[in-house]
Length: 450
Image 1: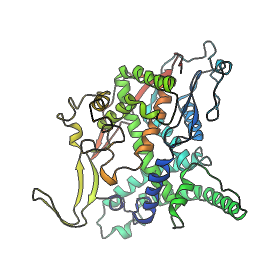
Image 2: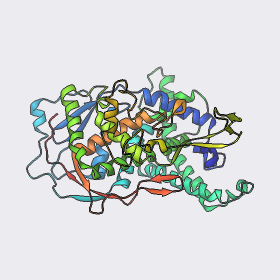
Image 3: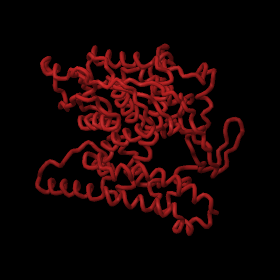
Image 4: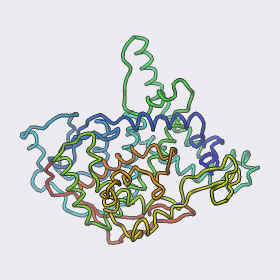
């Protein structure tokens, strides 16, 4: 069953699950501008006197500033710590770096317990929103609330609608409270975002009429218009579709990763050493994040443990298909590919164990250097799908997670709470991290030399 069928994309309120032109514009934007905008250098203040300069996929100067602010807003900053934003490619002189040494006794040493999943979801939402909707709305709490709420409303409404016979659904959806709520949430999204988009379009139109250069802001508002190339589309629907696809899946994986690392704390220092080594030895150039192979490996291993379901790649057979073994898939059959190979001991020894270096070791084998990267798909690891329909946003997700993890690891210490590691929750075919899981954290005292 595809998303259009499963989430009733043809009904009002469920438009983000439609296919056709809107989806095509979104996919063009993700595969084109988001994935290919990989060249801007930024300055990112990490911890104490550490200033990193990097050029990851679409991590622009403004996005780095937003990531830093979001981490501080959500997880806090020690008393007396001073933060500033340096422009891209700016080199700090020794006397300037001295200003970043913390004052005595200004570092909080007490451990704090926190619900990790809600905090990471808020963090990922803010970072993603900077790319999706730009500086005007990425800190707008109304937009943050509605983009987060829509996914939940849509799931609840679709579940309620499935309880009714198919021939009644075209009528029932108008009166079901859950469906009325999802329509209200979509209308609220339109109310918030449409004035911002129209203002930007008007400004650009006036600039073109005056023969001036139009505003170039690195976000999907302008890129969606470029991909549309005059074709009509609903900007609120497109933005909610992006949020639905990116924020919740990325925050789920980051939550699983943080839980895994807290349960296996022996990886924290090697990861910090890798970050420091890459920056200290080579500087932060375009390939910096690609060189963080241990971080890439722990991400892929956590993804193997916390994929989010027991099957992937839902499809509907458009015609009858006969397989090589004689099996016939009838037209209209709904298919998914099971993920049991991700737990196959012949492929991944001790599959139930968390082995953070698993994919690092696989990549060290001759001819396997690129096969086991986080963003690489294969029949053995279908978390991003496979083939031409593999997730087009996986490159952005990879770099977003890495930047977030760099900040969290270099700024804070982490450990498991006394409650221990919670098991993932199974709901039908879906698997989700426990929203009530807590971890402990505190500001790092160690000085980061880069």
